[in-house]
Amino acid sequence: MLIFRQMFDTQSSTYTYLLADSESRVCVLIDPVFEQVHRDASFISELGLELLWTLDTHVHADHVTGAWLLKQRLGSRVALAAAGGAEGADRYLQHGDIVEFGARHLKVRATPGHTNGCLTYVLDDDTRAFTGDALLIRGCGRTDFQQGDARQLYHSIKEQIFSLPDNCQLWPAHDYRGATMTTVCEERRYNPRIGGELSESDFTGYLANLGLPHPKQIDIAVPANLRCGKPESGVAPAEPDWAPLSLTFGGIWEVAPQWLEEHADEVQIVDVREPDEVVGPLGHIAAAIRVPLAHLAEKAEEFSKEKPVVTVCRAGGRSAQATVILQRKGFEKVANLAGGMLRWNAGQHPTQGSFDYDAGL
Ligand code: FE
Image (cartoon, rainbow, N blue to C red; front, side, top):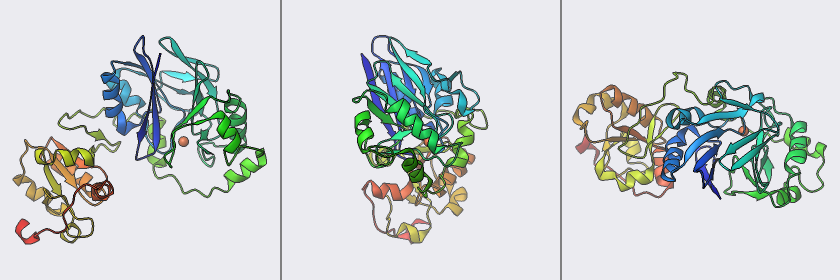
């Protein structure tokens, strides 16, 4: 039997897929995300699975792949398209290749156009296909960088994806509106770029006029993904275990707002914003000690090095720097509140309005 899971990275809106053979307990991961390696690794071990392969659908521009880090942690092997030009893979895939996991397998179809190295992975019985960014739910990948080619993408979708059975489920690399999957039949009919009666010139005209902004992560993600996600230092980060932390590719340990709310009394929360921000509209976390970033190095002496420290700011940028300052001061259990007070408030975690500031500093 197939074990199948879809997982989501909220930062990049990326879907990661786990496919396992329930008999032999071996699995593959499609499009793992660097910052989610903890999540994926703990999930795989909880289910008692062995990760054989990480399979990227292409060299992503919006997130760094977890392929290299999973290889370090779990001993999995890295596979992706030969055409993508990435270094350090264990296997370079071509159209027509098969990737086996136990009694099951995925068939590799080349679907270039979004990038020159895009692959679609089709499950052995044609019931599911993992389309990467070639075909999205009522959309498709852009074609204006990474050797993208709208005409090529049109033919990839028509010939390699729409040729699958009507009821074949399509699972894309992203969705930005909350949809999770679609089918060949639906997209053939309703995809606004290529469905229905739309022609090749309709499709290329549509893509030529998308007017999308330059992707925020492209300058970090593409070079890293061309190394299969290996950091420039070549060193895997050390592993703290006092909280379910995730590690950003920038090397900052982060903790989720939900965890912090539930474990606020087990940590020292340090709010590094300026005094006027702490009493501003975003409020503050009740238990927070407030120390503006500029004073953190001198005030750090007053914190315990035994009790973990979680740093907080408006959006998570200054507090990321605060974790670096504290680590330099010898603090080992330090993490940043992911997304800062903006995400804390967006998740409706409790805040207080104003500090009696004079009492604190
Ligand atoms: Fe992409």
